[in-house]
Length: 140
Image (cartoon, rainbow, N blue to C red; front, side, top):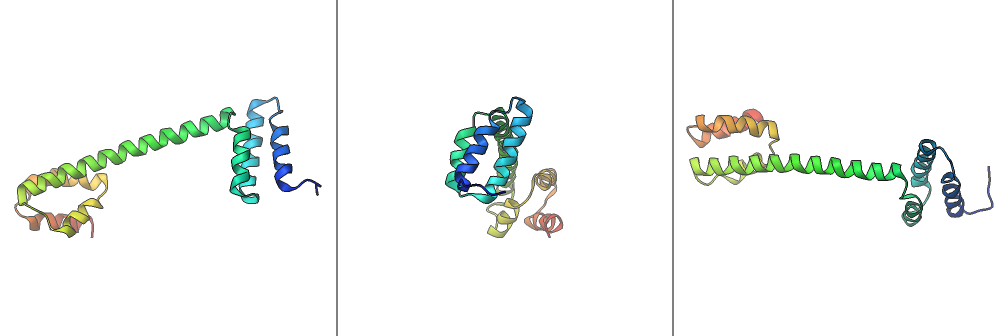
């Protein structure tokens, strides 16, 4: 199907018509589909204009809120892991003195599970060699 309108105008007109759909659930789905398809057809500035047209819709507000919630959860988890990492590094420095840079780098790359395991093993380490063996075993 061809139109005399340029893609930009056609897309904006489509959004205006979609906003008139009475069934809110259907309207939100149709507009979301239009946005997904539009992403491949138009430039960023037009997508920004379209966003301004529809940003008050509940579905988009819901999506934004969900994204923020997920961001907060991820941020909290990363913060907990960083807290573990800092505490473990402080304990190791207290026990063995300054740690070699490569050892610190490897600790920086550990995930939360390995950091938990390391926190249980610290008191059993007799030397920095025990730490290096643990790191090699967990992160070859």
